Image (cartoon, rainbow, N blue to C red; front, side):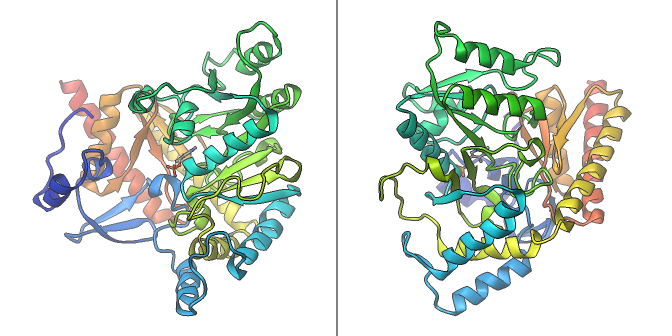
Length: 431
Ligand SMILES: *Cc1c(COP(=O)(O)O)cnc(C)c1O
């Protein structure tokens, strides 16, 4: 990844003992010992503002004390922590709360819950498997720059060549179609998708499912429009394919609403949730499956760690604390607009050679240049800000602060980014 980062001595154990595959301990070369809200503390006592939030697994911040109280009480009571998928009060409470606070409030009735293995990729696999079982078809339509995880089935629907090559076997069962905006602003790529899928001789097999992110997180904060998403859902219905929204990164409030597809009024056959679902950074993944699509036989898809009760307890607490009124959602929209205005202003300071895009509190600052993005994020970390890059060449700087961040911390973080970018640009011009 470009320049080599000089690692301080206290990372020696990680260099010696941990596999080469480690990534973030290279990009953020320090030892992190404590965290609270939007601030992480290094071993050496340095405070670092976190705009990565565990790739949006920490939408309610690190160690959210209100959520922590529910977990602590649950542990202290000797309630069941692990029980495979046995019935527990914790699971009942989660499902009933999610059903009433999230689904019914949004007119999304008649969904069933499938708790899968704990990772996002586990849930994606389950969604693909169910779609193939229902339709008897193999092909899945995925989109350019899409990211859905790195198990084999999920890798097959993931665009990045870096990941695909690493699989080591032929990845099959997917056809990639151009995402919204892939061919510029004047071409509606859903027209192409419709033609290809309705044409008996297009060479593209009828799909079991169309799988989409409403905003591509890893792919570079690419934002799909309302009409495009509605068209894609309509096409899925017309060709007898399941319509799946991967809301792993953009769900749980990241774009302002609980689900990232609410603004387009979609009703997916399957919704995939993970990352911030547990509310506390604990692993928890699930599918919402339309009742009439719930074609599983008992035990046909299992996993040892599915619906872990501790994670269900924190998930329920997050719903109760943040989603019983509209205030939280409105706060996210407001904060997102403030952040966007600041990023727009920074882009225009540099003569608009950069582009800002996103929805809610998922924003991307496209540097159109991997070196500038890399140098800026590295400088930012030295100055006390964690920001990550995304996009096909890692040229987009991704802003995913906790949705609970206060305005001062948000501004401090953006200030650090602004200075880091300015220094990078000065250096670039001088070179
Ligand atoms: C992170 C992510 C995944 C994969 O989740 P893991 O828990 O890393 O397996 C899948 N889809 C999207 C959109 C993601 O952001």
